Length: 396
Image (cartoon, rainbow, N blue to C red; front, top):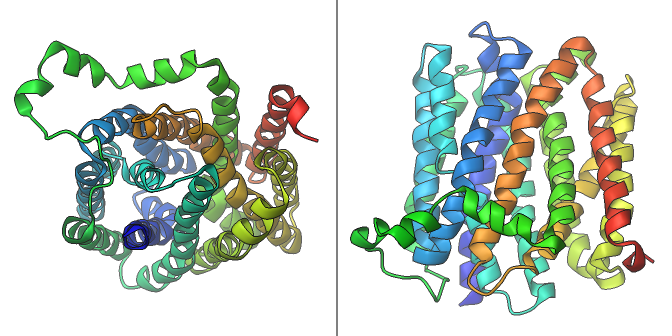
C-alpha cells in the first residue's frame, strides 16, 4: 500500500514539475512580447509567491484538519485555471491575475511533502521520501524544458495552454487514484468553519507565529529563507542572463534547465540513499554543501560559458541534497498531527524568499547581468555562517 501511495504522489509531483519545467525557459520571452521589462518579468514570479505566502500555511492547517487529498486536488485544479488565464490574455494585467489565481491555492508541493511524511515510519525514511519528491522534480526539469523548447515555436502562448491542460489531467488523476493518508482528518462541516475557534485557527499568520516562537526553529527557518533567496534569485534571471551573456534563446534555456534536472535526478536516485545518507550525518552534509552551493554561484558569475556550466552543475548538485536535508531536519521539530502546518510554514518562508529574490535579481540584472549571481553567493555564505553558529558542536 505504501508503494502505491508513493507512486501516486511521485506521478502527481512529476506532472506538476513538468509544467514548471516547461514554463521557466519560455516565460521571460513570452512576457517580453507584451513589452515588459526585466523587473516586470521577475515581478510576475514574485506575485505568485506573495499570494502563496498567505495561502500555504492556511492550506497546511486545512490538510491537517480535513485531509491531504482535498487540499492537494484543489491546489492542482487552481494551477490549471491560473495557467489558462495566463495563456488566454491579451493584456499584461491578466498575466498577473493568472499568477494570483495559482498563488492563492499554492499547496501542491507542501501538501505532497506532508503526504509522504504521513507514510514514513522513521527519520531516515522521511528523508528518503522527501528525496523522492526532489527526484520527481528533477525528472520534470529534464522533460519540461525540452517540451517548452519544442512547443514555444508553435505559438508563444501554447506552452501555457499545454501546462494548464497538464495540470487538469493531474487533478483528474488525483481525484480517481489518490487515497487519504491523514488518519486524523475530520469530515468537512461548513457550519463548524464559521465557529470562533475554527475561524481563528485558519488565520494564515498563526502557524507562522507558532513556528517562530519555537527557538529550535528560528535559525533553521532563516537558513532556509537565505537558501531559497539565493536559489530563486538565480532562477528568475537565468534565461535572461544566458540571452544577454551568450546570445541563447528559449531552446538553450530549456537545455540548461534540463541539465539542472539531470543533476537532481542523479543525485536523488543514485547518491542520496546509497552514499550521502549512508556515510554522512545530515548536519555535516548541510555544512559542507552550503559552502559548495555558494561557490557555485561565484563560478556562474564568471563571464565564460565553461565556468558558467561548471558553476551551474556544482550549485545544483549541492542544492538538490540541501533541499531534502533541510526539510527533513525541520520536519523533525513538528508535533504529531501538525506536519502539514509546519510544511505550510516552510513553504511560506520559501514564498517570502520567492517574492524578494526575483525583485532583487531583476534590479541587480538591470545594473549588470552577472551581479545577481554575486548576490546569490552572498546569501549562500551568510546561511553557512548562521549554520555554524547554530550547530557548532555537531559539525565535526
